[in-house]
Structures are given as C-alpha cells and as structure tokens.
Length: 250
Ligand code: 13P
Image 1 (cartoon, helix red, strand yellow):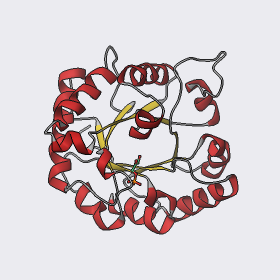
Image 2 (spheres, helix red, strand yellow):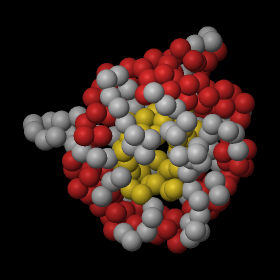
Image 3 (tube, helix red, strand yellow):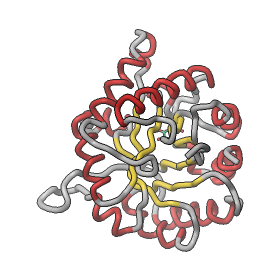
Image 4 (spheres, helix red, strand yellow):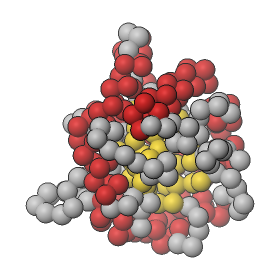
C-alpha cells in the first residue's frame, strides 16, 4: 500500500436512542458523497448497533463497536464479545479509548487481550493511545505512547487492514483544544516508527488523529503526512459537522 486510504470514524460514545441513531446513520449515509476516497465508519452504542447495521446495509460505510471483552462467551455479566460484534455486522472495534482507561479500569494488558480476541474472530481494531495533560506538560508524551503501543500490541501480529492506531491526546478530547498540526504530526511520525519496530513495517498502517476535530481544523490535520484519518467524537453526532470532515479527507 503506497497511498493510505484515510479512515474517518464517528465515535458516538454514550449518545443516541434507537430512533435518533437511525436518523443520524441515514443522514450520514445520504450525505457522504459517493465516489469519495475516505473510508467511513460509525460507532454507535451497543444498543443501536443492530439498527445502524440495518441503516448502513448495502453501503460502504462500516459499522464499529466502542469496546469489547476478550472472552468468546460465558458468565461475564454486562460484557459483549468480539463474536457478538461480528454477528451484528461490525467491521471495526475501538479498543483502549481513554474514557475506557479513565472510567472503566482499562489497562494496557486488558487492551492487549481485547485486541487479540478481536483479531481472532476476523474483525479489525482501532487502538487508541494518547497522553494526559500532565504527561504532555511533563515531557512524557512519547514515553506514554510508546508504552501503550508496546504493551497493547505485545505478542501479536496484525495486517495493515486489521489494525488502525488512533492518536488521541486526552487533553484534546471534548475540550475544544486540538493538538496543533505539528504536535500531532510529531507523535504520528513516532507511532509509525514504533510500528515498524514492533510489527516489522509501519508505512502501510493508518494512524488517525482524534481530539476536538471539527470542519474547521480537519483539512489541516488531515494534510499532515502521517495523519491518515480522524476519530471524531462530538462532531460526529451532527451530520452538518461530520459530513464536511468526511469531505475534507477527499
Ligand atoms: P471529541 O471529538 O469530542 O473531542 O472526541 C474525540 C474522541 O474521543 C473520539 O474517540
């Protein structure tokens, strides 16, 4: 792969009832230009996966889940397995989002288990990494991201179509603060070098940026040489914001 296809993914987080999810998915489907270069994925909450799968049927827009568990099935109350996500029509699973790390006790070790389980059923992973505000201010950004990649990807191999990295600086999520294009590019270039070290090759893997992406900053971020898409939170809930971000990716 010489030219990487950008991936614009909408992480709806804990938003949208069934009816709202259907309306939003329909609007994205209708508004995303046919013949676009970017790949598009939508990650609704678990409760809306089946409904959004129906809305997206026959389109090229991919369905994504926001998290998973590492076991196939069993007595794990409240958990959803990769096999169930495959069954409902998911293509991607987001793993290691900072909100999972912050509020639900996710560690690099559990991230690693979840990635392995997801790849094992043939689904693709979007692995989120990123530093906190304190870590950035303390000069620890590269160290933290390196650790998340090394431990998250320990002992596994994944083809470029099976693994996407999302660099999401925690201080930029939902805050309106965006990494500058230079700040983001610097970490993305590091991630690519680290993928080369860990997986043998880095160039073909896509690395998304996430954190307060809007129609206003999408084009300049996506124009950086190592930024291959966006993982969008707040702006993905509104077609009038998400569609221009898709368009900015070409
Ligand atoms: P915001 O776009 O709302 O900052 O969220 C980013 C994010 O966490 C996507 O996963």
